[in-house]
Length: 245
Image (cartoon, helix red, strand yellow):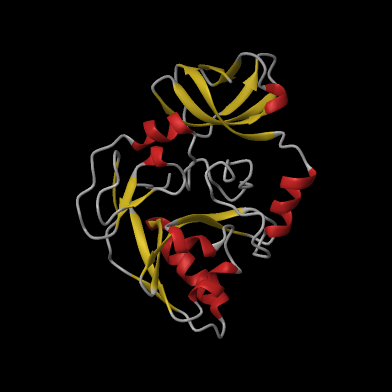
């Protein structure tokens, strides 16, 4: 499983930095004028590759990404760079996190203020059970709920301010827009009640054995699950655990 507590920071500089990112990521980089932006990079088929935070810092954009994906993301961005006047640098900067009021020099998590604040100046992080916070607010994490098979709308990116439908083209935009405007979501992440426990990735079934989804992060009698909504209308099973949507 991905170590989601370890983060890396890529510095993006150069006069084309906003234009360069705008054509790649799911959110509108014009929002950087007002603070940090949450976004994802998608495949041309609209599937999830990686998510990250983009933070304005003077003439630099900081990209905050889970450490295990940093080098692959840097390589992919470099491939897309072509002749853009952009410099990409993987740094040793520390990402700090905490809950409560956002302290001076930190930024509020753009997904939801319930996910606290983030800072990039070396200050200590608070000791927080982030899995419990994520489960409470149904916030997915790269390498757990967010996988190469994920469509970001099924993962709640609209609710979490991670996608913009008015920004124009980006990689994977056509599929994402079609899911938004032409279909009703029949599957997606949801917060469920759970009695017992089961390993992350355990299949969820109906009482008569029909596939109904996948179980993910669990905490305090609740969990994040990927569900087929039409089959999540009664008691469900995941291994030895009982689940109610």
